[in-house]
Length: 207
Ligand SMILES: Cc1ncc(C[n+]2csc(CCOP(=O)(O)OP(=O)(O)O)c2C)c(N)n1
Ligand code: SF4
Ligand SMILES: [Mg+2]
Image (cartoon, rainbow, N blue to C red; front, side):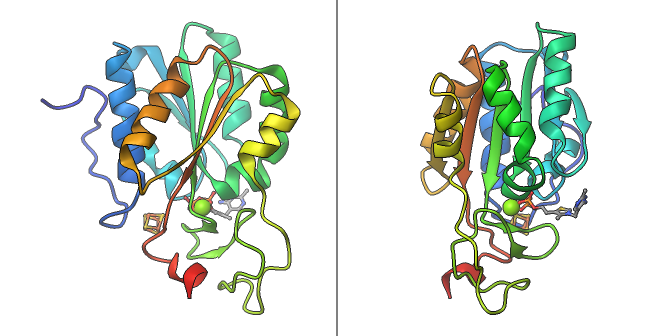
């Protein structure tokens, strides 16, 4: 049966991209919570992950790079009955938007932040991101990344141990599906760091 959350736009991600799993997990979680599209609002970041904006049918704002969390906070404050979700990448959430993540965690606001963590800026064709491993040779760091990577889950827990923060890996699809449902159900702030391998640019990180 077709999902009530599926828009008529077919996903444009690379065949096999792990974001298909995130999309399926979100749809499954909304359906298991018996939510209708008019009860859900999603703030999308910019990037491959954020392009999900076109593929889901519910309230949504395709925001600016790094600015999805403050938009989600505004949505939740304006209408606390809404289930509010953020969909973004490691670049937007842990880089340009990191200060907003800190604010949301301190407030323990009831939003669920899904980070498609592929350790790169993928939409812009594979530059170093805040989670790229130290020494990673990428398009933007041919001599190797000088900085240490950010661990989003540890960072968030160190700011507010009360929030839900979990790391899951797309190599285990059931764990991703279960974690998304847990995040949506959690009555407070939830961060899911969803580890992914970018099929187009990830080989820079393993070779
Ligand atoms: C304010 C602003 N800064 C930078 C960009 C360019 N830009 C677009 S997507 C992107 C990186 C996306 O990486 P990430 O958030 O990890 O998402 P992914 O594409 O890897 O899913 C950047 C730097 C932009 N669009 N807007
Ligand atoms: S470039 Fe990477 S993250 Fe983007 S759609 Fe392709 S596989 Fe997915
Ligand atoms: Mg990324």
